[in-house]
Image (cartoon, rainbow, N blue to C red):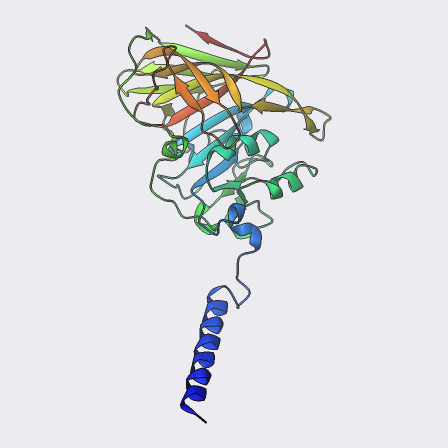
Length: 324
């Protein structure tokens, strides 16, 4: 064989070895991720973990909610509320109770680049919509070893997630940065505020300022909200965002229509931090844009240190926010 032929054969052998190694690393043992495991086809790791959490009395106290960077509260069927907790900087060993996803979650999570969504399931017609959404869905059917039923309460309020058993690795960065928000000094002005309640048709969330703890202490349906360890839940900043809540095309088994919360658009808001309330505006021009919170004169509103709670308060009398 000529020298040129030898070089050609060596190059071909080297290429074959590279392809074999690459195939093995991709999961030739059957453990390779499916195409949907790389959200939006990016091939990158998810940036935040969002977990849909139950929020009725039999589901409390919550587990791991105090370690969420962001806690969203939205209206669901029968006028009740449900939580979407977003984690990135600190991942607890157990989170829950986990419940089913809603259409609202899909638009809300478009603000994050590559979110993972952990949820117990969804209405059957919504499941294909979730599969097409630019996120990584991880229900129990895809990660059965990550979920378990707790013995201390009845189903469906006893499903918990062990996040270390799903394909997600915490970045260590606070998820508020993904929204373009920053911790900083309060805006000028504001009014002293001791307490603020957001009411849904069949639920309420109250925040009471504690100067000693420098936190807004949380009450759910007029009862103090605690952690699984018996500590009080608290928020560093609370945003009450005035939104449109309308019927969606989905519903539950009891025939209740699922509300859809419009998080794209603009409207008024109230920001609670440091024992004061600040009038603000929110604007999100498209689903893939961040929500911007600003003062009436157009200045950016920064956050206090600590967890951020964002409550979607329905416009038009379906819900209300009151101070006292």
